[in-house]
Length: 497
Image (cartoon, rainbow, N blue to C red; front, side, top):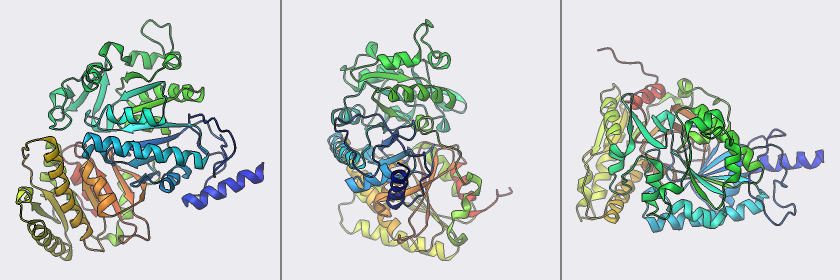
C-alpha cells in the first residue's frame, strides 16, 4: 500500500508541478456507481475535505484564497490539472457575467459536461460545486445554478451566500447589505441594483430569489439560516441543530445564509463539510468569503506588503482600467495624481463610429503613448472614459462592452515586453486580460495584495514570463486602494503635500 501511495504522489507531482505531501489528497461529495479504481487519484480518501470546484463568472472570486490554480480553459485535460493540483480548491473562469443568458447557459453546460469526464478520469467521487458570482447580487441567477443542477445533480440544496467581508458586504436577517462609509445600506438601494443587465428590486434574499426565478421559488419556501442559528448551532427554538437542518434538506431546496464576520461562515462551513461527508450533496451560489471557510487554507506565503518581490527587475508596470462603476472612478482619480503615473484616456464613444479604421487608429495612438511613458520610466494607466452610455437593449450594451474589451486586449498584447507588473481593474476586464490579452490557459494564484484583490503569476515560458498580474474587482476597496497597490508594487512612498 505504501508503494502505491508514493506512486500516486509522484503522478500528481508530474501533472501539477507541485510536490504533494502524503495525507494531502482531496476528496469531495459525489458518489459514482462505478467503484473500480481509475485515474491518477485511485479514489484514495486521505483527508476529510472535498475538492472545491468554483465556476467563476469573472476572475475575481479567488479574492479570499491563495496558492491555487485559475483555469481560463475548460477542456477535459485542463480541468484535470485543476483536479490533480495539490490545493483543495481551483477556479474555472467562465466569464459568463459578460454573456447573454443563453450564452451563459451554454458555457456552463459545456464546463459541467467536461467536468464530469475529468472527474471520472481522475477517479474523484466527492466534491463541492460553487457558482461564484457578484457580492452585490448581479449575475445570471438562477440560469447557472439550474444548468449545474441539471448536469451535475441531483443536489439536496443550493445556498445563496453573498457575504464578502473584504468588500463590506454582509447579510443580516436575510437582508443583504453593502457598507457605505461605515453604514450598512440594503443593496437594492445602491447603483448595483440599477444595473441595466442584472437589475433587481429586493435586498431581502427570499424576495430576491422569488423575483429572479419569476415565482418558481416563492419567498416563503426559501430556507433561512440566520445569524442566531449559525452562532448558537440550533434553530430559533433551540431544538434542531444546524447540522440536522442540513441533513434534512432535499430536492435542491433553496436556502439563504446570514453572515457578518468570517467566523460565521467558518461555523456554517464546518457543518456543511460534515453533512457532505455523510453523503449530502450541496451547490452554492456565493461571493468569495464562503470559499475561505470551505478551503481552510493557512495564511498566504508572502504577505501583501512584501509582494513587490515579484516585480520583474524593479521596473515600472502598466495599469488597465475597464470598470466604470463609481468606486473605480474614485480610485482612478486618486491614482492619476501619483508621481510616476501617466494617464491615457480612451474615449470609448469613438467606437460607436461605424468606421472600421477607428479601433486601429485608437490602438496605434494609445500604444505610442504607452511606450513613451514606459521609456520615461513611468507607469502608463490606460482607462476608458467615465461616462455611462445608454443603449437600446441589453444585447447592444453587451456587444459594445465586447468591442471595448477587444480594444483593451489589443493594448495588453502590445504592452512593452519588459514591464515589471500589470494591474487590471474591473472583473470582466481582468478575465479578458488573463484569457485573451495574455492568452493564459492557467495561472497560479499568489494571494491577495489587498483584501479582495488577487495577484497571479504568469508561467516562466510565457511571452511575459513571471509577470505579476493584479486582478482588481471594480467595486472593491476604498478610494486609496488602487494607489496602495501601485505603491506596494513600485515601492513608492506617500507623497507629502
